[in-house]
Image (cartoon, rainbow, N blue to C red; front, side, top):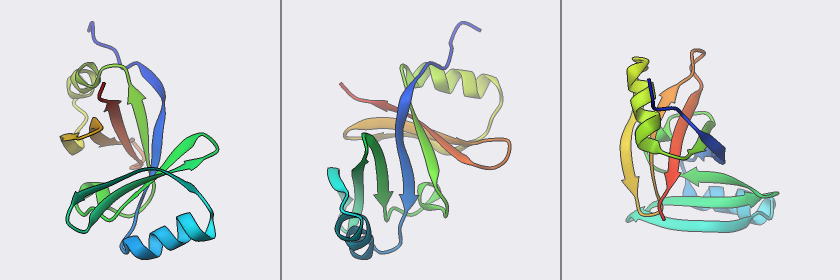
Length: 124
């Protein structure tokens, strides 16, 4: 197989939240984390990234597979298409189908132990 998964860095660690105002108070006010990115995906549905010593902690009140309980790891890859080809070639089921967002593209899988991993590629 010619395509390889080439991981560049940890893109972010993701915490799904149920109440965005309560989460902003916790992460921003209580913990004092600096906001890196705020994006209202649709009315009332937010994606917010905070800086934690140079790494991004993302929170969102988005439902669906991305909003399932527990933390997820997002890995920045050189080519999302190559990564997707490798994952599909290995017959690993996707937990999150490939999605486009204004700053990025991503998809998700579970590890053999059920931990969520998202593969992420920033847009130019």
